[in-house]
Amino acid sequence: MAASIIADDAELAARLAEAAGRIAVEVRDSGLIDGKALGKAGDAVANAFLMRAIAEQRPEDGVLSEESADTEERLGKERVWIIDPVDGTREYGERRCDWAVHVGLAIGGRPVIGAVALPGVPQVLRTDRVQPLPPVPERLRMVVSRTRPGADSQAVAEALGAELVPMGSAGAKAMAVIRGEADIYLHSGGQYEWDNCAPAAVALAHGLHASRIDGSPMTYNNKDVSLPDLLICRKEHAERVLALVAQIG
Image 1 (tube, rainbow, N blue to C red):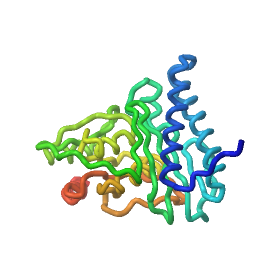
Image 2 (cartoon, rainbow, N blue to C red):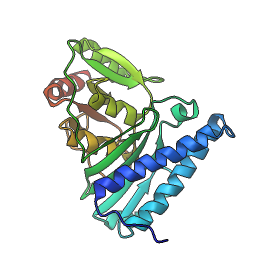
Image 3 (cartoon, rainbow, N blue to C red):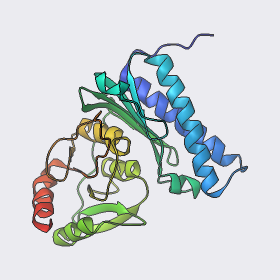
Image 4 (cartoon, rainbow, N blue to C red):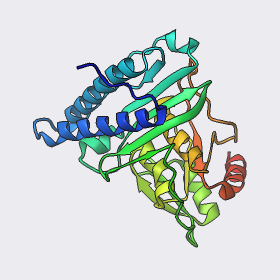
C-alpha cells in the first residue's frame, strides 16, 4: 500500500515526532539494549524512520539531521526539515522523562513549523495547536542543564533572583517554559541547528521570545550548522535578560 500523503506541514511534523518518539520508546522498553548502546540504537532507529518518512512525504525538501551525513544540497532549498531524532540521548538511555524528539521545518531560514515530542510525558507540542501559557509565578524559574549548567545562566539567574530548575534535553527545557515548569531558558554553551529549530518554532508560535543571546533572530539552513546560544522566555522578560547577558558578557 502506498503511503498516504499528509498535505499540512504542521500535522506532518507532529505525526513524525510522535511516531519517532514511540519507536524510540519501543527500542528502550525491549530490555535488550542498555547504557550508551541504547542511546545509539534509539537515535539510529528513530533517524532511519524520520529520514525515510520525510523522503516519502516531502521528496523535494531538504533535510538536516544530527544523525545523518550532511550535504550541501540542502543549501539551495527554500524548505529544509531540521531534525533531532533523540534530543537528550543521555536522558533517554537512563530511562528518564526529560528527552525529546525535534522535527522542525525552516522556510527561507526561519523556524516556521515545528513539533517537539516529549515521549516520557507523553505530549507533543506543536506550532499549529497553541495552548495558553500558565500564570507567571512570584519568583522566576530558569531551566538549566542538569549536568553542566552554564556560568552565564547561573549569573543571570542570580541577578534576577530566579530559581534554577535542572533538566535534561534542550527540547525538554524549551518546552518547560510553555508547560509552566519554568519561565526562562537561557543557553550559551554550544548547540547546533537541530538542537533548537523545532523548539524555537514552537516557542514563537506560542507567543514567546526566541532569539540568540545578543537579541538577533534565530536563522537556519546555514552552511555552518553551529548555533551555539539561545534565549526562550516570555516576551516581558526578554529585554531584561538580554541586558543582563550583555552586562555579564
